[in-house]
Length: 237
Image (cartoon, rainbow, N blue to C red; front, side, top):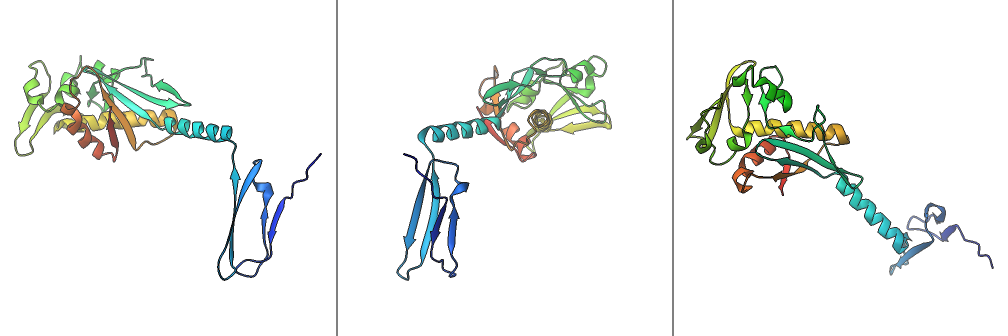
């Protein structure tokens, strides 16, 4: 036996006195739910909703999970390197540097008009050491002044009035002083640029993970100050 579907659901009139018709062709499903309400004044309210089979609901939920995972990104920091990763189609992708490696040296150079990060900055250290900042994880820790290294080509001091360390170094425009969060700001900005280039999306929240650095509480304050300048929310993993 064959059943013929009625494609139009019709009622006599709406509040405005007009005939109301609902086109069933727009519902791409096997079943629908009709909700009909009638008040004391004989005015009605009609809603028609699709009913998805359980397996369809499961697929939709999985799609939503995948969509969420695409928007997740993470930066991993070690004493000497950092790496950038994100999820795409449910798979983790680690961003490669210009040389094809998965890690970026934690170096920043200021010998050019625009700052340079990673391997290219590390190469500047040989010719122009005072223009390069490295050991960033030591510099951004709470006790940075105690970790002072006599071999550093830059100078570190402590500003009691601001309760923070200051790094003095050379730049393309001359001698400068900056707090450690300024360098973390540049690293985060660089990483966000990489992620946006790879995914086509701007991120307002990313994960931060520390490896081989001890307690994350020792670095959180510096990272949060840097992130505030980017209107970026950090989740410490």
